[in-house]
Image (cartoon, rainbow over all chains, first blue to last red; front, side, top):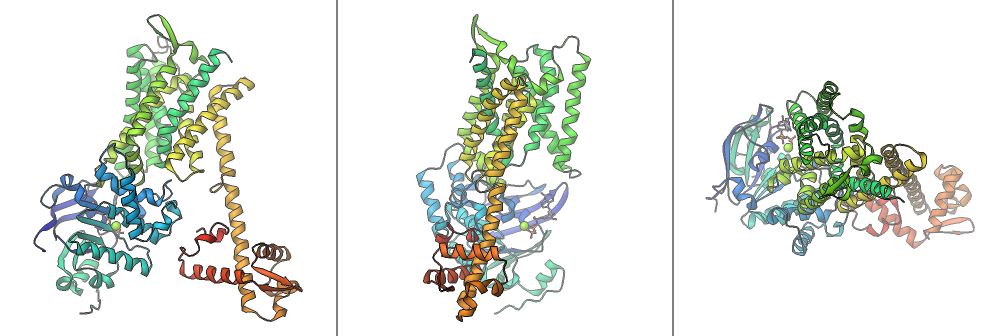
Length: 245
Length: 386
Ligand SMILES: Nc1ncnc2c1ncn2[C@@H]1O[C@H](COP(=O)(O)OP(=O)(O)OP(=O)(O)O)[C@@H](O)[C@H]1O
Ligand SMILES: [Mg+2]
């Protein structure tokens, strides 16, 4: 099962205003893994995801999704941005935001209809947000907003999911609800890539991990490479986590 | 009403609609300042266009001037990308430069150009009906009416075709890009529409009124709704209303029409800013006061629940026990009574079953922050509305 490469990144270098924040990244993500990207603030985790998704243009290197360019494989990919990246005061409702996930399959000009609404309602149900479907999005709590983002990714019905800190500011219940949905996705042989900050839960939640800090430090199965050595290399300080075997 | 009066109001209303549509998206994208920049920096485009065409209403002039608007946007973004200055500074650098080029061009050619800076900035609606469009010798109405009408039709067509794209790229640039709706294309599309509208309208209403008609109605509508479609409709209505009432205000005061319309826009914003049901200043103050009272109510109910001894529950001693001023205890007591949460028997207050349930649920909510159980309480109490 782990033979297909879902995402391949070659010699990727990305810069803001000519100052590189990602140096020469090589990365292969096998199909069907639930992978954490870990690294300190400013390590370039969000930048890496944005470059893979064609939101940023790298100054060097290339990205492929199942062997083809991202532009050709858009439909296979879903994206949950970091929560702070949108304007929550925007005049729109929870349901409307989730429906945005269907826009990709609609293409330009065509408008969402009943079918798209139904898909969106199902996704809201799945993340337990159906009662809030008509709520203006700024009137949702942080965890609820995160669930809305997740529902929006689910309606994209993709093969590969990129999520930038989906656990940011959510309580334990929501965190478990989200991780269960992610595990379900993995069971369906989807590839899920998550930027994650809580190192304690990495071994419990994920089976694959990438350490990133401007350069790629290591990537591979959690059980092989999630150790103090790589953590120290990534975070610079002496890191000790107790990993339950 | 004379024909000219009807025509003026019609032109002003169409300009208002044509401005409100891109204006709504500019406000949501926090780009209000860029419309100001565009409105000034089109001056050199207009002057150069006028040299070439000798006709202020020529489509070529409109395109040339709109191009200057786009150049403004590109320059602002270029300067901003260097990372040396912020966006507002970049805007402040670009548009005076372009505007002054226009001023110099006019001054240098003042003799043979029938154009002045005031006319561009302020326009003159009252004169709009005099410039007629003749097709095969037949008078079909004022030229500005036709120009703004065409621009409006195109704008509405684009809005209907690309509403979803405008919405997603305004709300979430990242998702928009990842789904293949290039935010850059949509951004420049919006900028082009804004520039063309500004140029098409400046002759009739002046560049300053264009800015006001783009920003003020949208900003006012934003205070009233949480639905993008409705925000567009409200913005259009406010724009048209200000245009009409502004016209009559000018008529009555014998003042500048553009000035009166802008005044009406300002007044309308002020009224809504004060009285809007949710986001208005008064509503917010009222809500804060209510919330304070409701917190007191809850404190009071908790006190009742925790004390079974009658002496602690005597109406006249409540003040001392919870340490409140008379007025506050009275409001709270009345609120509790009104909601059947307490009964007063022989001046002794006791909790009703409803009051007891309410207290438990409220405390539960405050501890767990789990708000699905208290949905029904949200309608009556501000405390639970986040
Ligand atoms: N739009 C931008 N312009 C200039 N520099 C940027 C921009 N966005 C990010 N950076 C810089 O790029 C670096 C990497 O940022 P990135 O957002 O990818 O970090 P991250 O690993 O996601 O951090 P966090 O954990 O805080 O989300 C940081 O040093 C940041 O300051
Ligand atoms: Mg980040």
